[in-house]
Length: 74
Image (cartoon, rainbow, N blue to C red):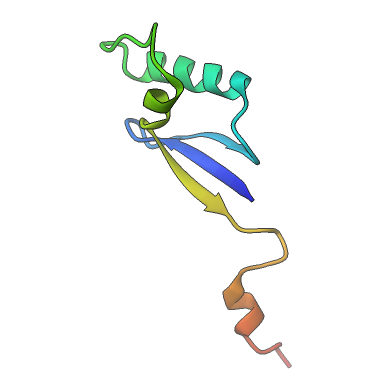
């Protein structure tokens, strides 16, 4: 399942993907450094960096459950 990570500080979508890779974590920490320059993120742990992001599951492209319940247009 794909997920979208959005920044809790600026509310922007920062990452969309199946799983979070080490390269993604570097990108997320870089975003935090730009978004909140008053805080230091030099020695932040992965778990601590992820706290700054909201994770939301993205539904598959086949459609939503609501679409499946709706009768076809005639």
